[in-house]
Image 1 (tube, rainbow, N blue to C red):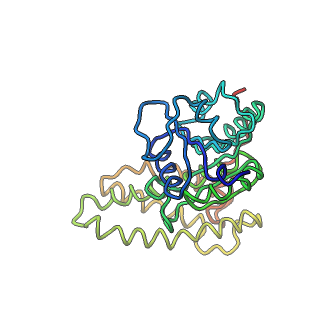
Image 2 (image 1 turned 120 degrees about the vertical axis):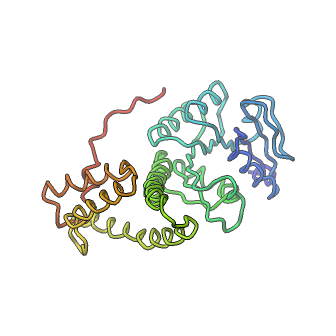
Length: 296
């Protein structure tokens, strides 16, 4: 591969994230050919292609950052992908990523799927903490490693094309749980003479202190002993849940963000898991996988 080809790539999709990715590569000296589905100004310095096919033909490395899996397929359908390395930075499910990998392979290309753990303002910013999960073709990852490190940190998680999406969605799911707890906490203090701005540092500090709980859960899942090292067991937690619910009622706050998890805790206790931590809830959530309809 020539030096000039190493420093050039194509980006399909100029939404907030796509545009941020383009700017990061332009700033570091890359020639970037771009295309967007709708009329939208391209970052200054980018080479604008008239069609997605023209953009894809310009470079062997084609980064896709669109709305969803359907839009990715619609955009790439009919394009000659022979010799093209597609890096899909569109949020998708693991099954969608695996099916897309097969779909692209049948059309002569190779897929590296990606899960972006950052917001646009973090892209191209040194020490922002943002990073990208990659999974799929190890050869594609190694070939384009230099370019992939430009927008954010990188974390290659394996040859299974679905793993980047799985890591991405698993962490986002954990984030939603944290956001739900924060929303409930702010609602509890909302009717009192308590400043949300003063309360926020206390919440952040407590959430950070509790975050290490995940290590214990991981160790228990690995050992199979869910009562190992438990200081506050599930039965005790369920008793405390009553106080949480009564407080919500007193404060005029709906408990709907809390009750689904509490119901799982109570179910685990009823099944004999009262001496455990909350790790047993993981088993309750696991269900046999059902076949997923995939695009052809």
